[in-house]
Structure formats: C-alpha cells, structure tokens
Image (cartoon, rainbow, N blue to C red; front, side):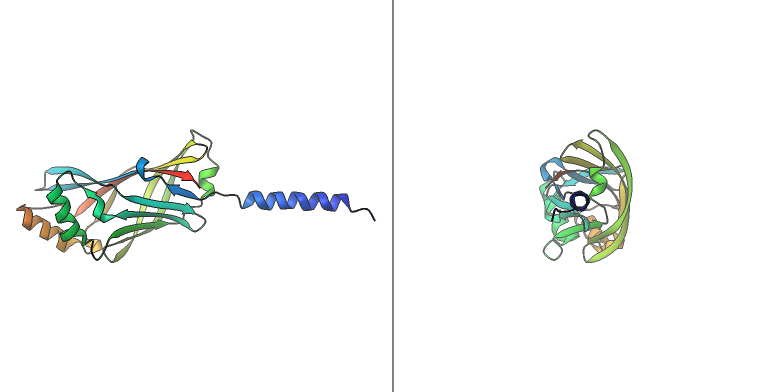
Amino acid sequence: MRPNRDLISRSILLALVMAGGSAAADWRLVAEDSSLGFVSVKNARIAEGHQFTALSGSVDEEGAELVIELASVDTLIPIRDERMRELLFEVARFPTAIFRTAIDPASFEDLAVGESRRMDVSGELALHGERQPLTATLLVTRTASDRVSVASTRPVVISADAFALGGGVARLREVAGLDSITPMVPVSFALSFVAD
C-alpha cells in the first residue's frame, strides 16, 4: 500500500512550523561590551558619575535578568569604593542587585540588523534585602545577526530609602563630612547581548 503523500507532506510542514515556532534563541549579556552607571549628588550641587564593572545577565523564555555585583562599584576613588561596599551596600550580606522583567526573546529576533525599537518594561529590582517594582523605557537595536544592544532612553531613578539604604547614605555622609547626599539616584545603562 502506497503511503498517503498528502498526509506525509502535511506532517512535514507541521513539523517545520513547530520547529520554527520554538526556535527563539536565548541571549547572554556580553559584560565587556556593557555598562551600567549612576550619578550621586553631594552637598546639593556636586554631581559625580560612577559605575559597576561586573555585570551578568540573560534573556530567555522565562524573561530577562540583569545581575549587578555590588562589590564592583567604581567611583575612581578607592576609599570611597570601600566605604560604599561596606557602609552603603553591605556587600558581605547583600552581594548583588538583581533586576528581572518579562521580555520575550522573540522580540529581539524579529528586528532586522540596524533596526531599533522602543520598549517599555516593568519588572522587579531586588536590592539590599528589599524588592520593589521598577519600570524603564528601552531602546533595543539589532547590531548584528547574533547581537542586540539594550539601552535606557532616560535615567531610571532609584530611591535609596525604598531599598533600606537611607541609613547607609547617612553613614557615608557622616564619614565623608558632607552636608548632604541626595537619596534619589539616576541610573543609566547600555547592555550588549549575544545569541547563545
């Protein structure tokens, strides 16, 4: 008995469609091509830029995750880095800050190389033992067939008090002999991801 060619053809087509539907790649953060910085304001008028140098992250079918190693804080002043690690972030107890949000990796793959898209995301930031909702507007750009850049379009403002960091800010102010340190901190980032 000859097999039903129409049935075989439909079965092959269905298999190809199913394979294509599940082909969304996972994406991994390229730390050396990524940056995340923040600005502190002291004595109400002196603004200084800082960064974290150790980042990791991924985007997969479960969503996106960005992990910041707080001990990697870099303010260009070693004693200030040490004070931030110990007095503010308390990295021995809280070594990382983690942002998670629901991003479908397929939203990266339908961009042509050179094409950009704005994307509003809502997620949760875990920092210093606290978890708070956080929103950001991103500019997602396909920079190569296997590369995507994700950048903030405007700073994301973090409240020190919302993450139980107010006491640490006060300790930093006292040890540095400052009149004030603004507790609202703008954060900006430019992240690069590669398809795994």
